Length: 347
Ligand code: XIL
Image (cartoon, rainbow, N blue to C red; front, side, top):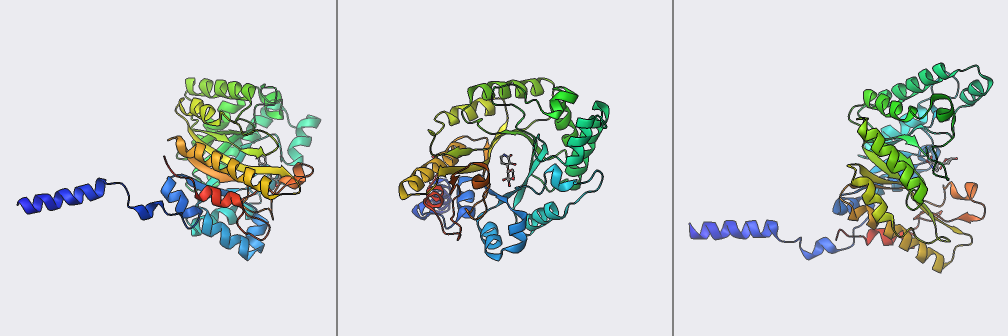
């Protein structure tokens, strides 16, 4: 009996003891890192590259357990003509994710960019009045969220709704529907998929004081009205020519203290070209600090990079003279940033 008890005690001790030393060895890849950190690690997916490039597909599916369609779920892509839907690219991303056990972030339902021409022109000309616009938005959300019901872990319901002065962005949504469109969008999305986590997502939210205060106000107001909002998305588009946003952890905490989960949804770290070893080292440090910020907050559940390779990046097209923003180069070789992510541990 004594023997049995001490045997049981030994087993109990072994179970409670810290993980053996080998658990601290460097993970083989980002999927293994994700398991040890208990944070989903994702990438934006370029649907054209997914369809056409075998090496891109192989690395995406090997490394990531979470994906976001870079453009394939945006309104201009899914409804290029009024009432004529094109789900081909979005379906391909979701189907590839299912086959490779990746969870999906839906991106994005309500935004001021990448809207179809018929919608912008209809609103501009007055052919679509406010009442109809509200119906169109409701139907867009119900249709898209409904199509992927049960297949999307989290939706970016509203994207970039606060401008750079800290005001609600003067989009067609605010202009014609008033500020209530935000609550409506969350309610409709929740109706269409009650289990999806619903996010408000923005850039510069890591550090822009005005944007932070306004966004906190929006979240508090939605919560007070019992609107189903569950998450805060920090896009995480950084550049090494700017200081690292030093209080990012504190900012994230202010949102998660309201009961939200958090995600870093579009991480990339650009630089003025050409890249040098020194710049790549700074970039690696910024990536590592972003992931560490997520890992240090119990409610931060996802770290997603906005593409994983410099072969396919929005940066050179959008920021003149800048580039090299991703964790792998054009040939999918690991950059210092990749290794810096692998080195992150839970404290
Ligand atoms: C970008 C895509 O990466 C580009 O391919 C596209 O031309 C423009 O949009 N914030 C967002 C993303 O929420 O949807 C944007 O993606 C990058 C900034």
